[in-house]
Length: 157
Length: 177
Image (cartoon, rainbow over all chains, first blue to last red; front, side):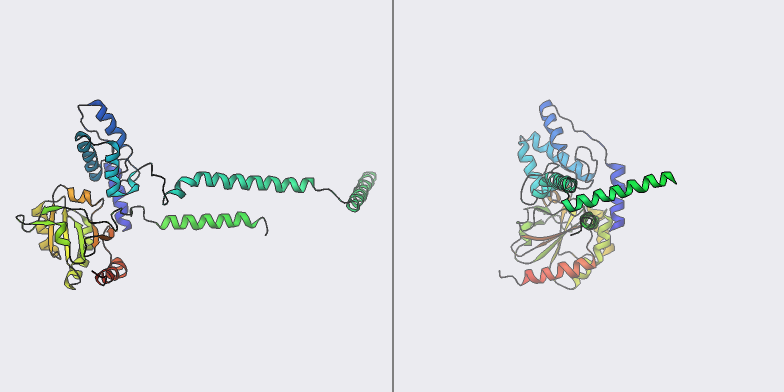
């Protein structure tokens, strides 16, 4: 299986390159370009069917072209692909229960990061502003005095 | 809780997440056809082009639909398992010869064995497109109502056959009609 994946990847590297289709109508051609650059090739998974020259991408491009020529709407073509290959063919997956985490993740990570940062800031501020009790105050002063004395004695010696 | 434990927990969580991610197979794309009626088709049979094979031929019993081609290396790899399964008379196995030359396909079957009850010849890959085929071999398990209940993409392995496919076939065969 692993060897197969490597072979597939190697195939992709050698064959997945750009290709175009012939249209007489420029509006149709523009729609063809947008549609094919929004659909994923399932063989060369990080390429659109516009970029890929895998046999499947060519088939899917031809299908998009055929449907466009036959007067299909963009959403009809996208639905046709999703019905066969699932949401995975879409580079922009729809928001639904299975993709909610995918869409929410950036906001979620930002929230967690911000929350953590705020928590750290607050925690550090708390230790700085902590006031000493009267007892601690006198003890600190005596310690400082002792230290100053040692310092001057050191200089004398 | 020690505040130094928090980064440690974060790190462990990240390692677990990445370890799971590395084990996933990105080429296994869930099929939207699972639990849906198998798409309709009608194509000439490979062995006898005068006769059509259609989705209706698959009704009435639990069946396997195996998409293969003589040019496909993975098909050669899984083929002995299909031949073995056919010999066990578990269920009818239908083939769909995907974007192939019929002479090559027939020669391939003579050489490697023919486990198929009947084979549809999908010369242009039109049926394959309707079934969302993106990497032959692919194997679909249909219940007796012609509903796709399971799909395996890539060559079948002994593990998939014994641990997933056969128990599922058993279960589907005992489902009330």
